[in-house]
Image 1 (cartoon, rainbow, N blue to C red):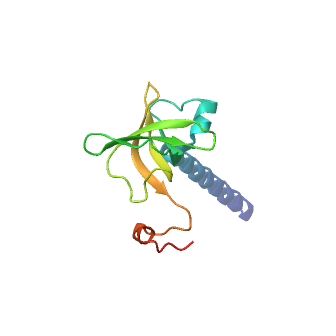
Image 2: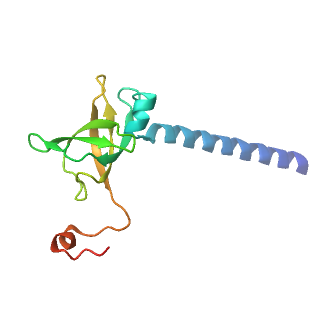
Image 3: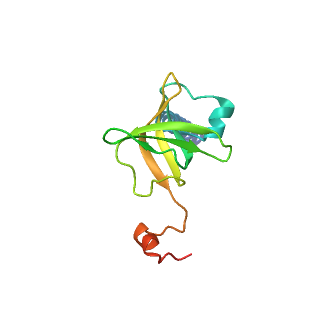
Length: 141
């Protein structure tokens, strides 16, 4: 084979490998990507597909946290649009989880539009201070 033909084959094989890698990455990301919604976005665009794993984020509405049997709880997530999403969760929540604080719940909507969370992430700002210091009045602002 001539040098030109070898280069052409090399470029063709490299292009085929690159296309294969991009296709593989796209398929993997589609299967494992969790779409992020806020209550306002859900009210605007409607509920995501039933059973599809999504993340709902916002703030835990003050006075909405209700504990049930064992580790069951329900609460409302709100955002700046004043829309809310009711979340039910069974399990242990992070230490930073409380009313008025940021939260991201990962879970699924059912046929009735109820959101059942599989995991809860508590969000905080960059000025985090341990609860012990806040209780003792030693908080630095």
